[in-house]
Image (cartoon, rainbow, N blue to C red; front, side, top):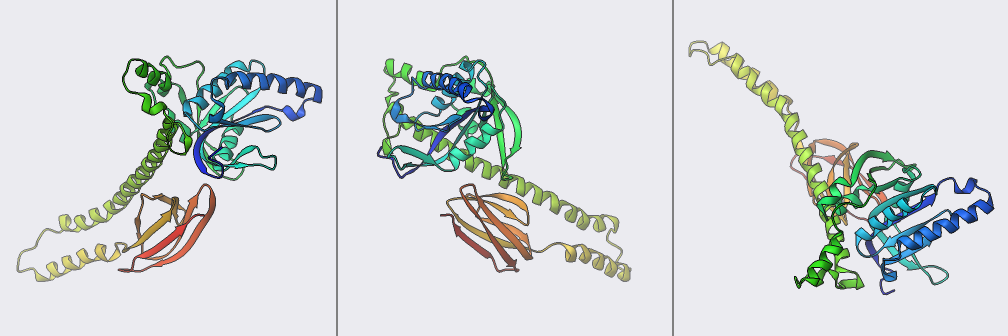
Length: 346
């Protein structure tokens, strides 16, 4: 495969047979045979070059290199065909690295497959859960998909990492798959063949479009967190503004002859200003991206976040990336002297 050694963004389905290790060996063989048959039927319509299957003993992991809808509908098919087989399923969209193992077979590693396994671990037998990154991309592909997902809340794995998960309802949505719509337009001469063609790196252009949607979703989350931070800053500044306005309302301008009272009013006006916090600036240059946490509070995702304002004094700044160890910096913020933090995760 020409993509060996490259890092890609793709959909990963991780599934296993619940309590498989507790069964007798004879029963394990029967369960695995049934499992393999269900898996083969579900993947029959997905081209071999668009998927990589790893056998995990009590289940399997499938990386879908093409259309993310292939992952969704294959996982739904496995769940609906399992019957009495206690299968748990988790789907994630994230970065994976393709490489060859000791036997020369294609293998996958990376955060994309790790998160898929964590999401599967939160599922009950017979339940299909997806990560927020997968949900953010797929539900935008068709209006029918909005009714297919149900927010289950946040779950924390054994590494104290939080995951927003969504369950997938039963039944195929009433609308057609997006790829079916593209095929229908192509048959009508509408020029939809571009999406179905092969793009850079040998990937389907629909898959590249899905990767772009993931980036847009991450930027949207960063802008949302930034807007929340600005609202919290404005709310914190409101009491100080009200304190400044209160003395003026309570002490109207005195007559010219009452000079002592006017001098006292000026002193009262100075007190609130003197207690207002003075702010400094921390400028960020993070690659490729990282969540910014200052003194234990999350401030946004950089990029797009480029700078933040904090009270003068010492601060602890932590930059987190899901794939690499966190970067921690202890800084001293002074008036008129921006602090610069540069870090590249690699």
